[in-house]
Every structure is written in structure tokens, then in C-alpha cells.
Length: 104
Image (cartoon, rainbow, N blue to C red; front, top):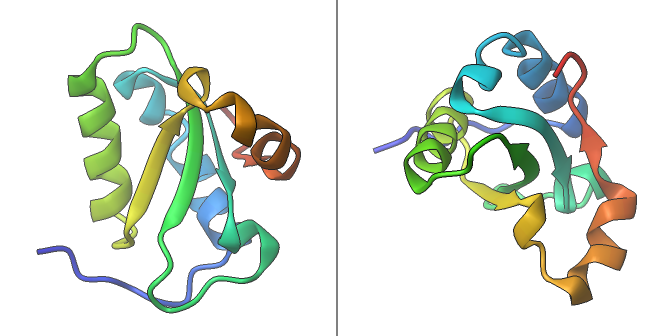
């Protein structure tokens, strides 16, 4: 079971992702950003982190590897959404608030 850690902010998570900018491409991740309650500063202790990403040669195995990395390393619940699968009715809400990690 993953230990859920508190104290994360959008800035600390983006810094964490940037620190792993050399490892994320090995999982196929080309670009990853944070959106949702953490970006808006509305997160609660039980909030998950919402990530939007682009991946080279998407497979469910690679997605699962990235999901496990994101959930295990920082110890938070995550929602990992491929940008190509973002529903059209959500694009106009999600895309303007995404904050992308640097270095990818």
C-alpha cells in the first residue's frame, strides 16, 4: 500500500517532475503537466493529483509504469490522463490551467 504524503503543492510537484526529467522519457513521457485542484490551490488532504501527459508510442504497460512511478515516488493518489484522450468537452477547461514540468 502506498503511504499518502501530504504537503505537496503544485510548485513542489513540478520541481519533483523536473528533477526526474531524465527518467520520465525512458517511460515514453514527452511532456507532463499538472492541472486541477493543486494548480488552483484548492486541494484537500484526500485530493488526487491530476496529470496531463503526452507519450511516445503509447501502450498500457508504459502508462502503468508512469502511473506507478507517480503514485509511488511522491506517495500521492494520481489521475494520469493522456492528452490525446482528453474529452473534447473538458479541453477548454483543462488546457488553460495546465502547468508543465520543465526539462522534458
